[in-house]
Image (cartoon, rainbow, N blue to C red; front, side, top):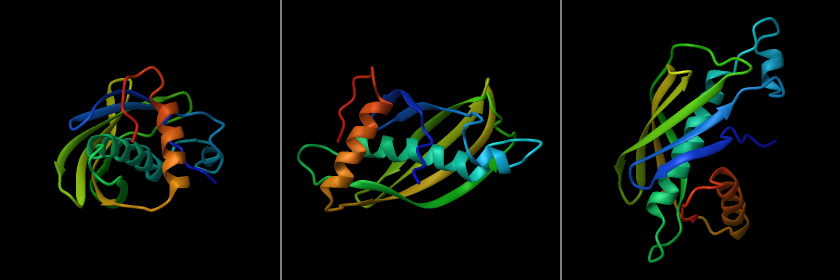
Length: 156
């Protein structure tokens, strides 16, 4: 099972922010049980979409040619608030802003909105870890190339 909950990165400025979208459709299996008469994307999956964009932002910001390649691993969720559900047909606009970056960890503030109305927000903390796996690195590169098609971004 794969949870790719980010459909596209629409804008990125490494070291500052990233924006992206998640389309909510009835093909999302979780909507059939959550809930049968009122389908909505579970809040945990909204957080995961924000985390995927936040991890992407951190990785394109932190990985430079002269440093060992690191991957961002979500380790903490703070101040998560949900104000409206995301329903089939909604396009969730995601924004992450880098608020702190250290050698071993980084934090982003993340927002999710639908048609200009905020539906969720959170502060996400990621651990930066060197992982010795070429398969992982190539998987991330393929995914990041798909997410950023049409953007000029260096893929680590």
